[in-house]
Length: 340
Ligand SMILES: Cc1ncc(COP(=O)(O)O)c(C=O)c1O
Image 1 (cartoon, rainbow, N blue to C red):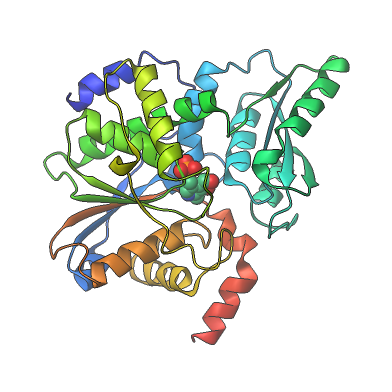
Image 2: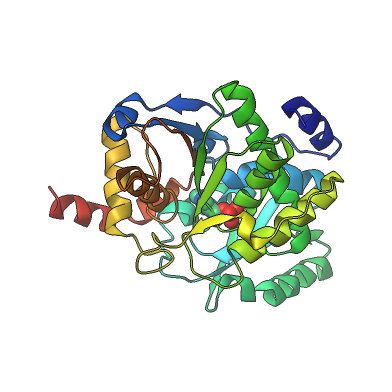
C-alpha cells in the first residue's frame, strides 16, 4: 500500500487534531560524520502542547474516539513523572476539560519539577500514592464515581486499556507515513526509538503496511513482563483490526533491546547521560535520561560496534520526555561534574 492509501485508511478514524504535523526531520551532519552513517532525527519532541512528545500523537486518536465535549474531568494514572499524564492534561486543557491523576510515587516525586510541575501549572488535580502505575485503575474508577456522585461528569482514560492502546498505536502508523512522505526515496534502513509497546507497535504496523523493510529497533527503558514484544504484538494486531487490514504479527516481528535499561526504569545510566551530552554538543538537541537518552545510547553503541553498516540510513525517532531532564537535574549535574 502506498503512503496516501494508508493515510486514506487512517482518515476513516476520528482524530482530535493536537500535533503540529508533520514534525520536522533534522539531518544531523556532525553526528553523521562522526559515526559514518546518515543519521536523521524525527522530532516528535516537537509535537506541540506543553513540551510535546509521543503521547500527543497517540492522544489524537484516543481523544478522537473518546469525545470529551460533555466531560468535566478526565482521570488517568501512571508514575509521578509521567509524560502521558502531562500530555493528557495539556490536551484536556485545550478542550476545556480538567484532569485528575492518581500517580504512583515511583523513584521521582518532585512536585516542583518536570512533569509534576507542569501538571500543577495546567491545573490538574494530582494524588500521589504507593503502588505501581498499572495497579491504580480501581482507585481511578472510585474517584470517577465520587465525581459523578457530585454531578461532575467524569471519564477514565487508562493508558493500560487494550482499546486505548490500539487507538494510540494509530498515531504511530501516521508517524510512519510522515517519515516516508518526508524522506521520499531516502527510505531509512533503520528506525531507532525509545519504546515500551504502543509506539513501536504503530511504527512497525505502518512500515509493514507500506511494504517497507526498515528495521525498527525498540530500545526499552523498562524490564516488565507485561510490556515489550508480547504486548507490542497484541497492540499491533488490535490496531490492524481497527484499520481492517489482514496482517498478523508475532513477537519475533519486533526487534527489542533491553541492554540499555541500566540499573532500572527511571534510573539514569552513564551511557544514557553520555549520549545526551553527545547529542547536545554536536547537534544542540536535548534528550531525557529515562527514555530517549538510553535509546540514543543504543544507537551510538550499535554504530560503534558494527550492528549498523557504514553509510546506513537511520532515523532516530525522538519521543520527547524533555521535562525528565529537569526532574533528573541533580543526577545530570553530578554526571557533568564528574566527567568534566
Ligand atoms: C519520552 C517517552 N518515550 C517513549 C515512551 C514509550 O512509549 P510507548 O509506551 O508508547 O512505547 C514513553 C512512554 O511513557 C515516553 O514518555
